[in-house]
Amino acid sequence: MKVAKEGLLFILPSLALALFFLYLHWWVVSGLFFALCFCFLFFFRDPRRVSPGGEQLLLAPADGKVVKLELERSHPDLAGPVSIVSIFLSLFDVHITRSPFSGTVEKVDYQPGRFFPAYRDEASTQNESNTLRIRGQAAVIVLRQIVGVAARRIKCFVREGEKIDRGQKIGLMYFGSRVDLYLPQEARLRIRLNDRVKAGQTIVAEVKQ
Image 1 (tube, rainbow, N blue to C red):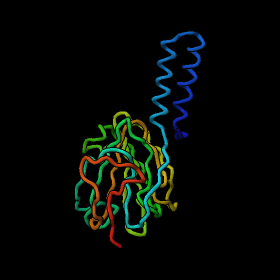
Image 2: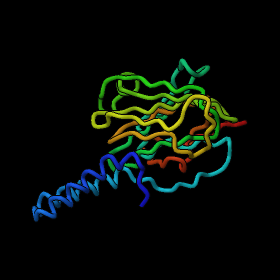
Image 3: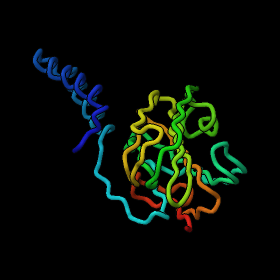
Image 4: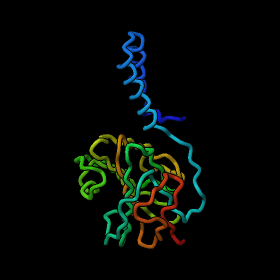
């Protein structure tokens, strides 16, 4: 099982402590640290994903459950009305985020904030977040990584001006979080509320070219 390198900061210390207490024959304590190590291995897993082709197809940026599908009148980084797709990631979901399509990162905007539960509406505007605006052949979209109560850190793998591919890993959020995807109004949604989606694989919407 492949593991994100960012997880080594958590995995290696817990493994070292497990082995240390095992050496001392402190079986219960050692077992607890082995269990913790396994939990970190599970959380930071990095499964291989094969993305479907089609520049007009927009893919899910994260694993999780669709908790919000709404139309908003405007967005400061997009022209006209936009569709909002919110995906909630539980502790059991893969937390690596991926690009919905190929394009260029036009903007990276990190904002400190509060730590409301990621599934609440306040999280979109008030929580700590990292926003990416990506321009592709089919459309311009905005993707916002949002951390919640347990998640207190966002790792961004890309920078402004960088060209990225569909399904490419673009970030990691720690321990439960949310991703909001803002799409142009003409994007035809291919998902429903409460659907389960997978980053870089599930088709979220289609944009006519």
